[in-house]
Amino acid sequence: MVTSELRLEEAVVVSQEEVCQDTYLLWLSCPPLAKGAAPGRFVMLLCGEGFDPLLPRPMSYHRFRQVGGETQWAILYDVRGRGTRWLSQRRPGDHIWAFGPLGRGFAPERGATNLLLIAGGLGIAPIIALADAALAQGRTVTLLYGAKTASKLLPPSYFPTDLEIVFATEDGSHGHHGLVTDLVPSFLPWAHQAFVCGPTGMYRELANVLRGVSSTAKVQVLMEEHMACGTGICYGCTTFTRKGPRLVCRDGPCFALEDLY
Image (cartoon, rainbow, N blue to C red; front, side, top):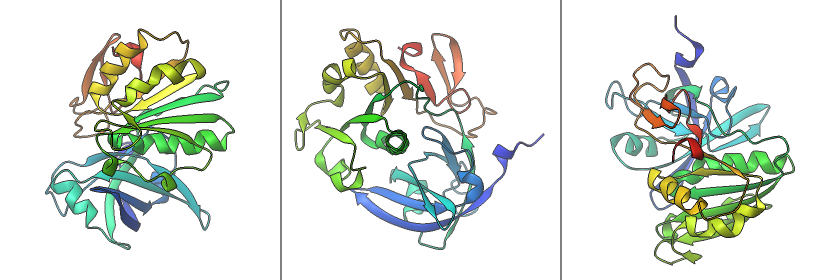
């Protein structure tokens, strides 16, 4: 039986711009792919003509906006290969085939009023969606945002005005000189929950840092793995947790950090 998640939809490009070095913001119009979309969930985009490249690319929902009664949505991505290079060349009015929404996203608890968001590099993409939603619900949100260098940070004007942001760069070109995880001990005791997205190595480092922090805050992370189908059919994104093997596309991509490390 074919599920609705496997149905290909035509998304129309609304706009596209390079927001920092080799990082693009792409706004799309496709109501079926906006229905059920939420921070931490993702969509699979076919990034090419015909069957080259063959496999779609998983992209987190980055932002949402209302335009004329329609919910438009955006993705934020780096140009890393043929597929994303093709994607960066799309112009308003172009069509992109996609399917979704997919996966399990972030799950803020009802009583969690203080949220700590932690983003490393392109992990900022789904974190911004969560920040927008949490601030709209009246929650207090602090973002710890790190990158290798200042040229890979989104500009301050890009963020919600009510969001407190602390920057970190590995080369010291902006904000704290070091890893974004260095900042966590100073902020986690304040938080009721924490939500994280970044490279896998960042999660391992964060788990080590948390062993020395006194806090009851639960930490949720978004896992990234290579995906072929996005729906749990191919088992290509299997990851091993304390509860056994899990599929990032179907059981995640959101997991409790304590279940991973």
